[in-house]
Image 1 (cartoon, rainbow, N blue to C red):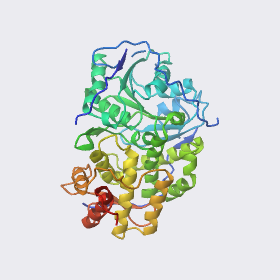
Image 2: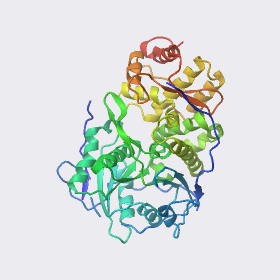
Image 3: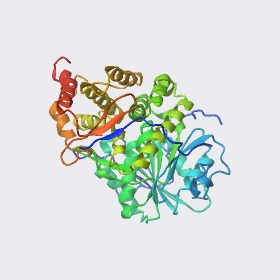
Image 4: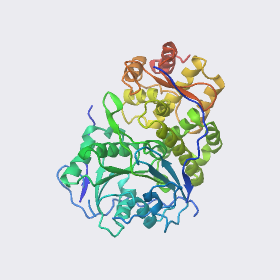
Length: 465
């Protein structure tokens, strides 16, 4: 059975330093030449399905196999080895309580091989595969067949949601839960998120609350999701008053990154995702930052598979290390939100969907760098480096003249940011040399106000200082 969702309108103090550090050797294993596959047909997938009531569902399993992993890989990760033919990397996210999971990163995967790898992380007999109406025509049928390709009777149901940040709401989330209940799926079901950050966040959140928690798998199809949102277990939906304020931490069973899916990613979304890659270099990995400067054209214009694979792997290594140290974002993990407090305010104040997430974060990162320099925490030369790399990635560094943002809009949205503690706003700011940052509530509020005023000046018909 296949469920297709109808198009819905969305309802309207101490500091933690993040000094640049060399990552310890994470479990990264290189397991055929990389190349982009030709884009699949964009025609709607031909699934045997019927529509039911509210809109979305489909049906159709899984020897335990895995690829070559690091020496301490889990049984699941070590099981897919025998038939592996693709050269790929495995980055492990190490968590307490036996909740470790692999991030598989590669290109040119054979469907049978990829299916074997994915099915090794399905613990029950049923899968709820969720995507959106943009990804559906490209990849839904492909991945549905991968999950069905085993010999143990795995049944696959599918849900297709409307696309876009504006649809990241409780109303749309309910369509996933409606489908699961209509299909009478039990606690052994595995939810699978096939898509970008919006799909990953919503499917993860639905998995975290369905019957008080079921397993889920991430199959990200955008750079943003591959390097950031699919890793680390953050799940959420937006509220009209603030972004990502309703959610939970819920870790996936695995993350499967097929770089070939980026062949269908629009340029604007490619550039948006690179904003999160740039972040890692700025806050903790200066060498990676310098590599990005030298390889930006290869990533966003040439879409060179080897460059993209390295950028994704290195980003995931950085995030995995931070998540291991601070899974629930009590301190150092918050540093991964460089530029996000300003950026989330821009997304909310401009209307969800006007900016892609990475575009808003890019402006927020420029603002954070400018504010850091105002306080004397970084040299002006580093601010220039921040602006230069954002421009290399074709990302915005200022608000457009017709932006609705005002100083009041910024401050109101920032006052209910998730990093507020006991009524005090905390920010991630750059401090010291490239690759260093601080998460703190101890900053000059005048510098923050001056930075905001500078950025909204042109929107209000004033010349920028």
